Image (tube, rainbow, N blue to C red; front, top):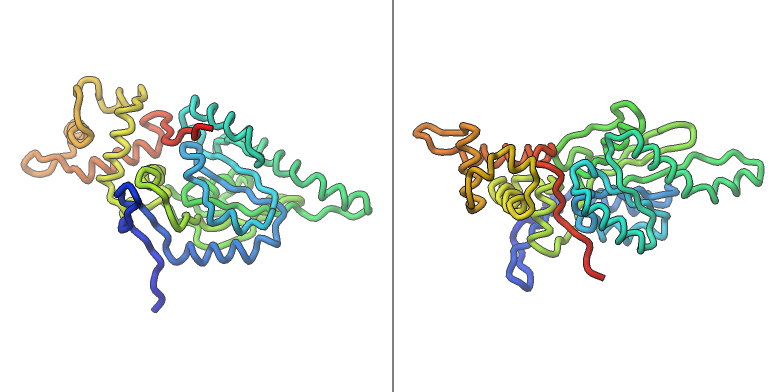
Length: 301
């Protein structure tokens, strides 16, 4: 029986933090598939999460791209802090790779995405046209860590349910070609995590956006991290939804108990159901009900 290559919270770094790593066997297989099929595509669309633009990248994938043109697409801008997006646009504009910030549910965003993808291949298409040959379809490979919205982007581009979607990592498990029209084809790939995450903080960012399954770290730890972050970077939605101003200064765990009491998530005897409350908080955050909230900011030059 094959051993699953799954890493959990078992490693420490130089600062004594526990690194959060999740790299099950199917991701290693998917990484090999990227390496084997990269020669079949013209362009790589790397889908990242706009709330963690660097940490939602994957250096393990980049070394397999073999100089292929790449367009970095930062999805979920509807959930990210707008001022942070402006900082990131400025930061990435000084780099070499073309990029685009999108909301997969915005038709306008996806029109720009299709336009940029086709523009990237104009030079290659013109060579065929000059020879009197009809250009072949533009073939693109979608890459990214789990739950960045690759399947949603495909479904919105095709205007049909071409792939399974879900707010949990690991929904797409196989590579599959999807035809978007006479001149555009997409190769969807499973979400692939980096084999190594450098810091516990980066791991918690990825847990919060649900790139890493909740059971790897535990809902309590992830919810505590999200609450702590929102206490330090409060949004009006967060303050109003949980009556935070009325609760007074509390530690994150105390605020979770206060939220559970407000929601009447009580066990027999009146004790707050802490696990249920944590799950509710994570659902609220991931649906955008706690406001636009980013975790990562551009590094200093």
